[in-house]
Length: 483
Image (cartoon, rainbow, N blue to C red; front, side, top):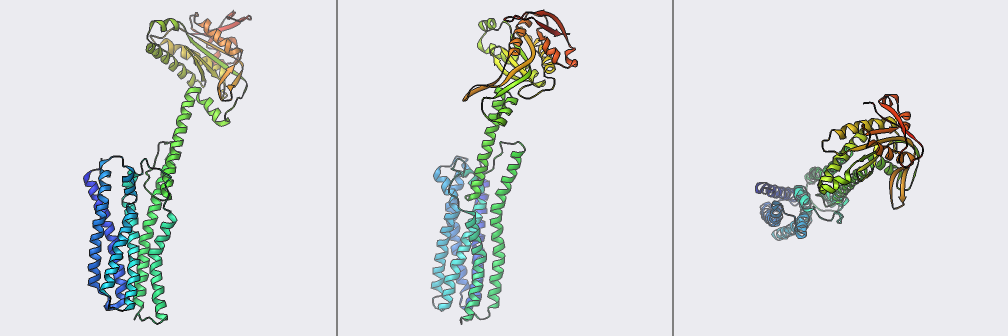
């Protein structure tokens, strides 16, 4: 909620800026006309007309601003009509100000009706030009002051609205603040050459040049600020995106191509954030190494033979547990089990390839290569055994580790596939896991895993007798942790 005091300050600041633009343009025009027309130009009348016009202009601006600032202060989402009222205020008020200047020009022409055709011509040309200058200066100032209001107004609006072009803004700025004074100098000098008597033209030319320099600097500073500030904001936001802050956004408050740039940046940032979210979600489902491989190589069915270590972990008695406990209790137990498995596998460089009910298949050495994959799988098995034993309510379990050649890659159909490993080592790991459920160590490894592992890890295991695994004919020598 925006406080009433802040809204009041915003209103006063906006009105003060609009009044200053009126006064500056009025003083410039009165000074030039006094120098060009001479004593026949009625300064008191011009000041009176200008003061009346300024009061009328402030009244019109206040009437238009109050409804805008009321909904801004209410902190409510603006309606389309309110949004349009706020965004169009700088342009609409400039047009209304132009009408006030036109009326002022008509009054001053009537006041100077007997001053001669040359004086009337100068008044008829100078005042509209001064009015155009005042209108555009007020437009620039209103756009700058009301940025906070525009930021709220643009929320939920179509970012691809038709822009009011920056090039037009720059061109009009030059024309009003540099082109008009230069045109005045050309007119004065040219008029002297064709016989118009301006008297001593040095002072009018000097004043026109000074007005062009001062007003040009003032206006180009306004326009440069209106372009540079949002560009700096977008640049800073891009830097934050590069640092990993994908939730970075910029305020949209400009009605030109700058506003489209701000909206475009926010759309880009939202897309990056969404991509990172999907990538993280994808990585959580298939493993970050698999996700990274898919992003690097693209979609498709592919793979090849790899020598990997396979670890299979299975709970015992889960069916009985599920029949005697509520589903949420079963899920809580499984999540605890899976959390320990994922932590141990991640710490040793493997990936969890799939969850199969109450069992887990983990791979070491694919898709990314891993130095001493067998040793890493054996170390993860020992660590996981202790983690699961430390859980007081954990079901019994069996861990089996093997090593050998497998097909590692994507299998399925072109529009639905998954990364997996297929080979005898996978089946063997599942059978060793079944055997481990009845072994005191609850963790067993095939001799192939010990033979492929570095001595630092294989030395922590002790070979046992040969056994014939379920569904196999050839005997397999298994090993258990030494401690």
